[in-house]
Length: 503
Image (tube, rainbow, N blue to C red; front, side, top):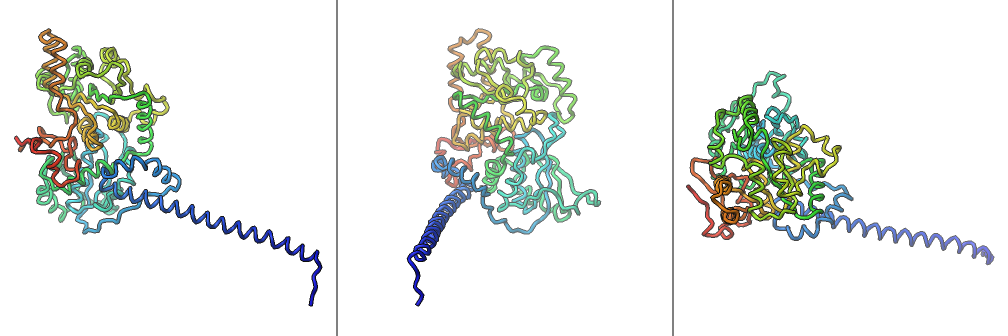
């Protein structure tokens, strides 16, 4: 038998002890690693489940998501984990729909929602829409310069197949002649099923070359109305650059206190198009008239400005806006963000408004020149920044009910019926004239303005339906009532005294 000396045993024990310590340390590290991975996996699953649920029912989790917002952002940024994709909808493709949107950003936004809905109804493959580059604004932006195109495609894959471009075999280079046409305005489901769908049996590709208001406000199946909302509120996200700069503007304003977003639509294109020249000099009125004649698609040429104004069809002037805001009780020290392009007449025309409300700010006053440089000469991208600020503001006040005013109003209703002042311009110009000619005192003027707008602040209400007059009835995107409550008919919320007015 081998007998080891005490020194040999001591040396061996010294070697064994470090090995045991290493094994214990490794075990502890493994346990810690498993715990960390398990925690990350659990939080990731939770965030993704919430995201999937919100895709269909974003309002249900409004309270809980407020608590988890910071957590979810942190986890997503840390893990760079994309949201789970819903399984694509399987259907027999009846053809390809190509669309060219016309108008400004918000008119095109509504049109995109409509065209996705039409593609879903007819089981078509939609090509990513082309944006208007030939209008007054001449904005060269493409879809993916404004909207997150990958999110747009992926978030709707369970409803409709969307591709970035047509297959090559359908290009003009290969001699293919697609059918080009504008669908009829304010059309319902029956029109598209009976008039448009049969065309795809002869033409594999149809190009809609105009898309503004091509789907009716009312009489559309509930599931299609909800799809219009889903595209508008969830699928159409702005690009990360636009989102980041828009959110920065919102933060800067909120740090200074509550703020009003004023959509002061006193811009050259609007005044020329509408023929509204109240408050303009003769030279300015002539300049606007020349511009109106320069654009052949602006059909109305000879316009009596004061007649249009008396019918409430003109945007309020900056001077009129100052009086109305004062009459409505806005404090002199409230922040007012001008959510518009260049005001016709420049700072000179803003003098009265600025005297009444000194804390008026615009994008170029809040941001460094370099931050806006990328967006210069891109009116739709600038409008996207105004859209973000307007939906986040404490109060939104549009001075004309154009597309931006309507679409922002609808978003603010969806976000919890945030206050939107829907100005009754026909009533207001009458009151303004009576006050300015001395018939109404300031107190009388103020009391009447406030009384006439008590029910015009974006409250819950049904859309007004006017048979055979879709232009005069309430716009779907200003009040998407089908998407504002969870019950199928919303009758409990609207109540018997708040029914749809049919005229």
